[in-house]
Length: 133
Image (cartoon, rainbow, N blue to C red; front, side, top):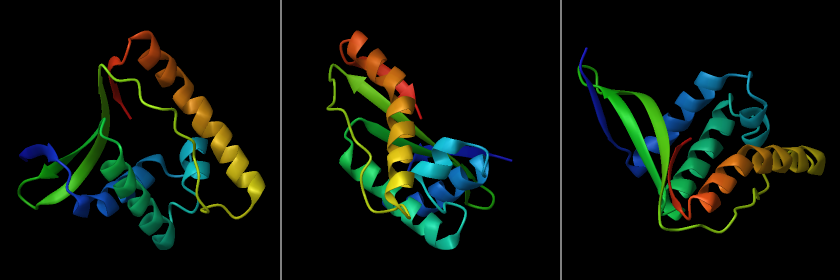
Protein backbone atom coordinates (compact mmCIF):
# COMPACT_ATOMS: atom_id res chain seq x y z
CA UNK A 1 0.00 0.00 0.00
CA UNK A 2 1.39 3.38 -1.02
CA UNK A 3 0.02 6.49 0.68
CA UNK A 4 0.19 10.02 -0.61
CA UNK A 5 -0.17 13.20 1.47
CA UNK A 6 -1.43 16.27 -0.34
CA UNK A 7 -3.39 19.45 0.15
CA UNK A 8 -7.17 19.04 0.11
CA UNK A 9 -9.23 20.56 -2.66
CA UNK A 10 -12.70 21.99 -2.12
CA UNK A 11 -14.12 18.75 -3.53
CA UNK A 12 -12.48 16.75 -0.70
CA UNK A 13 -14.40 18.39 2.14
CA UNK A 14 -17.48 16.13 2.08
CA UNK A 15 -15.33 12.99 2.21
CA UNK A 16 -13.12 14.64 4.82
CA UNK A 17 -16.07 15.32 7.07
CA UNK A 18 -17.38 11.77 6.61
CA UNK A 19 -13.98 10.52 7.82
CA UNK A 20 -14.17 12.81 10.88
CA UNK A 21 -17.71 11.65 11.63
CA UNK A 22 -16.80 7.98 11.34
CA UNK A 23 -13.62 8.39 13.38
CA UNK A 24 -15.33 10.02 16.35
CA UNK A 25 -18.66 8.22 16.08
CA UNK A 26 -20.82 9.20 19.03
CA UNK A 27 -17.97 9.13 21.55
CA UNK A 28 -16.90 12.78 21.52
CA UNK A 29 -19.31 15.43 22.91
CA UNK A 30 -17.57 18.18 20.94
CA UNK A 31 -18.31 16.48 17.61
CA UNK A 32 -21.81 15.45 18.73
CA UNK A 33 -22.91 18.98 19.64
CA UNK A 34 -20.84 21.20 17.36
CA UNK A 35 -21.85 19.08 14.36
CA UNK A 36 -25.37 17.86 15.17
CA UNK A 37 -26.63 14.82 13.25
CA UNK A 38 -23.11 14.32 11.86
CA UNK A 39 -23.64 10.58 11.40
CA UNK A 40 -26.63 11.05 9.06
CA UNK A 41 -26.39 11.80 5.34
CA UNK A 42 -27.94 15.29 5.74
CA UNK A 43 -25.70 15.98 8.76
CA UNK A 44 -22.60 14.90 6.85
CA UNK A 45 -23.56 17.12 3.94
CA UNK A 46 -23.89 20.12 6.26
CA UNK A 47 -20.64 19.15 8.01
CA UNK A 48 -18.84 19.02 4.67
CA UNK A 49 -20.20 22.45 3.78
CA UNK A 50 -19.04 23.84 7.13
CA UNK A 51 -15.58 22.30 6.66
CA UNK A 52 -15.41 23.87 3.18
CA UNK A 53 -16.36 27.25 4.65
CA UNK A 54 -13.56 26.88 7.23
CA UNK A 55 -11.09 25.92 4.52
CA UNK A 56 -11.96 28.92 2.39
CA UNK A 57 -12.27 31.53 5.14
CA UNK A 58 -9.36 30.81 7.50
CA UNK A 59 -6.02 31.86 5.98
CA UNK A 60 -4.21 30.08 8.83
CA UNK A 61 -5.79 26.68 8.15
CA UNK A 62 -4.20 24.02 5.97
CA UNK A 63 -6.24 20.91 5.20
CA UNK A 64 -4.27 17.81 4.23
CA UNK A 65 -5.46 14.42 3.06
CA UNK A 66 -3.97 10.98 2.79
CA UNK A 67 -4.90 9.02 -0.32
CA UNK A 68 -4.34 5.31 -0.89
CA UNK A 69 -2.73 5.46 -4.33
CA UNK A 70 -3.87 2.06 -5.62
CA UNK A 71 -7.54 2.89 -5.15
CA UNK A 72 -7.43 6.70 -5.14
CA UNK A 73 -9.48 6.63 -1.94
CA UNK A 74 -9.03 9.44 0.56
CA UNK A 75 -8.48 7.68 3.90
CA UNK A 76 -7.54 10.50 6.29
CA UNK A 77 -7.85 14.23 6.80
CA UNK A 78 -5.99 16.65 9.05
CA UNK A 79 -6.41 20.34 9.67
CA UNK A 80 -3.27 22.24 10.60
CA UNK A 81 -3.41 25.79 11.89
CA UNK A 82 -0.21 27.67 11.15
CA UNK A 83 0.17 31.05 12.83
CA UNK A 84 3.19 32.91 11.49
CA UNK A 85 3.29 36.12 13.48
CA UNK A 86 -0.46 36.59 13.53
CA UNK A 87 -2.95 36.40 16.38
CA UNK A 88 -6.34 35.92 14.73
CA UNK A 89 -9.58 37.29 16.08
CA UNK A 90 -11.42 34.93 18.41
CA UNK A 91 -14.13 33.03 16.54
CA UNK A 92 -17.62 32.30 17.83
CA UNK A 93 -19.68 29.30 16.81
CA UNK A 94 -22.78 30.53 14.99
CA UNK A 95 -25.36 29.25 12.55
CA UNK A 96 -28.73 27.56 12.65
CA UNK A 97 -27.59 23.94 12.78
CA UNK A 98 -29.17 23.07 16.14
CA UNK A 99 -32.67 21.88 16.99
CA UNK A 100 -33.07 24.38 19.83
CA UNK A 101 -31.31 27.22 21.63
CA UNK A 102 -30.17 24.99 24.51
CA UNK A 103 -28.27 22.68 22.14
CA UNK A 104 -26.71 25.68 20.41
CA UNK A 105 -25.65 27.23 23.71
CA UNK A 106 -24.10 23.94 24.85
CA UNK A 107 -22.27 23.59 21.52
CA UNK A 108 -20.95 27.14 21.91
CA UNK A 109 -19.80 26.31 25.45
CA UNK A 110 -17.93 23.22 24.21
CA UNK A 111 -16.47 25.17 21.29
CA UNK A 112 -15.11 27.94 23.52
CA UNK A 113 -13.74 25.42 26.03
CA UNK A 114 -12.08 23.30 23.35
CA UNK A 115 -10.38 26.31 21.77
CA UNK A 116 -9.40 28.12 25.01
CA UNK A 117 -6.01 26.36 25.46
CA UNK A 118 -5.17 26.94 21.78
CA UNK A 119 -6.15 30.60 22.02
CA UNK A 120 -3.94 31.02 25.09
CA UNK A 121 -0.99 29.30 23.36
CA UNK A 122 -1.37 31.48 20.25
CA UNK A 123 -1.39 34.63 22.36
CA UNK A 124 1.53 33.51 24.55
CA UNK A 125 3.60 32.65 21.46
CA UNK A 126 2.99 36.05 19.93
CA UNK A 127 1.24 34.35 17.03
CA UNK A 128 4.07 31.92 16.21
CA UNK A 129 2.49 28.48 16.56
CA UNK A 130 1.51 25.36 14.65
CA UNK A 131 -1.54 23.41 15.89
CA UNK A 132 -3.14 20.24 14.59
CA UNK A 133 -6.93 19.93 14.81
